[in-house]
Amino acid sequence: MRNTITILFFLLSINLSAQINFDNYFENKTLRLDYTIGGNSDTSYVFFEQFKEEPFWGGSTKNLVDKFNFGDFRVLVYDSIKTKLIYSRAYSTLFYEWIDIEEAKQLSRSYYESVVMPFPKHEINIQIDMRNKKGEFYKIFEIKLNPNNYFIVKDKQQKYKTKKLHYSGNHNKKLDIVVIPDGYDKSEMKKFHADCKRFIGYFFEVEPFKTHKDKVNFWAVDAISEESGTDIPGKNIWKNTVINTHFYTFGYERYLTTQDIKNVRDIAAYVPYDQIYILVNTPKYGGGGIFNYYNLCSADHKQSGRVFTHEFGHAFAALADEYQYGFETAEEIYDLSVEPWQVNISSLANFEEKWKDLVEKDTPIPTPETKKYKNKVGAFEGAGYVKKKMYRPTVDCKMRSNSTDEFCPVCLRTILDMLMFYAE
Ligand SMILES: [Zn+2]
Image (cartoon, rainbow, N blue to C red; front, side, top):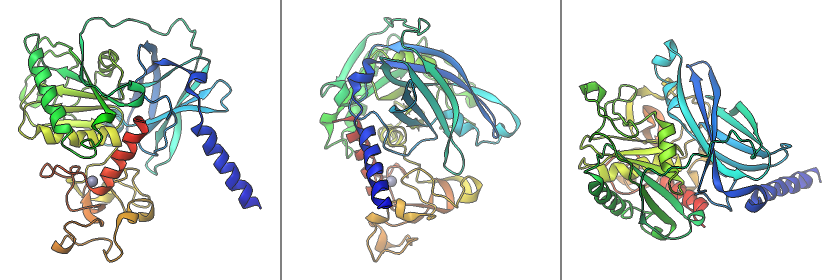
């Protein structure tokens, strides 16, 4: 009996969270919360910066509460008396990557960050949680907001033109990707549009996007840079560009990012969006993708088309890199008593919760990298930057190398689930 009551209560609570009526709580525009996060490898602090109102809500009006347990952070929005969760979204950040590097043991530094949510009709409570190394979330920040507060910034953006690059319909019912140019000067907007066309072409050649072309909108904001190109600090090249992208993030030459989040968000807000893609006008190999944060890709390297979808795997579906890079064994960066939260790598601590359902009965776990299992789903050693004790689903995948144009079945399933969450 007790079990029945527990199950009933469980079903009821799921049901409640699934039935948030958008119009009861929100207006169809965006509330942005900007903050600075500072700290080091031991501690993190959040400092409030500003609230901002933006004209469009690009997200779903149906799927408001995040059903995936991904990301290094999550934002939770409650009603005023904190009895009902009305919106949530998980995400990762550059700061979270930084606290793992050597520098964070000697230095404290800060990063500007930002989260968006639909604009509330009534007072709300916003909470930000961060994940610890055991994979559990804990609260790092909380703030109340009355939507009539006159400090909510309402600056109108009118500097740049926008363009529909690929349009399938109402942005509340589609996955909306905004493409922002960086390092295109005023004579290069035509090149930017041609580059967008080329990348959208590559994008729709890859499954599951190929089959679901009608669930995606692509938008462009023609943000013009003073100079052409991007910063390459390791080669002492510096360019004055609109959102200040640069190579050599954390000392990795090919890691292309920007810390100019405030500008990125201000420019993205010209159109409705769920995902931000920054196209960087350079032939140099590189890119970056951080979950629900942003994607970056260089425009003119011969591998750029494949990098474009790989980075999207990170930023859209929170997929891990399936390759080895710099670390010999998993203990150096993972707690092997738990599974990493990324769906496409496994420590085998609890393989049941990962992709075991996709593995055929006669495939051994771990799986040897032999001809017999070349096209099978298993658990192949070497993933998530480490050579030993971390496993990936197949021999090759877009999240592992640029030699294939396909996501493995685990990555594919996750991307598809996410796509359906955004597009009805
Ligand atoms: Zn994969």
